[in-house]
Length: 115
Ligand SMILES: Cc1cc2nc3c(=O)[nH]c(=O)nc-3n(C[C@H](O)[C@H](O)[C@H](O)COP(=O)(O)O)c2cc1C
Image (cartoon, rainbow, N blue to C red; front, side):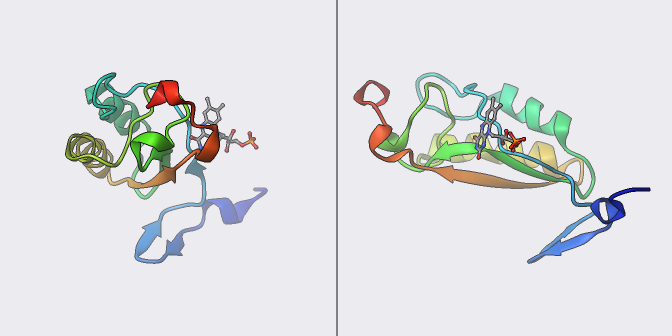
């Protein structure tokens, strides 16, 4: 088989990945419209893609309200958002998956209409 290393385990800090094929971060713009919290749909989406020992890098998520560059991207700066992400993480962990979150601040391109 070609690329055998792809299917070999990998230790990443404290995380033992079963293989080296990871899900790349994909902005979905599916957060709750008022609070920018992940919704049950987000938990379902990531839970569907979780596999035992597989790594998911979740979508880029603004760390501040003025760091947003797209509509409906789920943030990680309020209690409601953290609690929404908790449900996402629980859905992934329930399947034995590993999930990291990509942190995001778009900088000066963040238009005031997003604030
Ligand atoms: C709809 C969509 C959303 C994406 N969102 C992100 C993102 O949130 N963060 C990121 O780093 N890359 C993002 N990307 C880039 C993908 O992660 C990238 O396309 C993937 O790693 C495949 O790499 P390639 O396009 O070089 O083949 C996005 C790509 C698409 C198509």
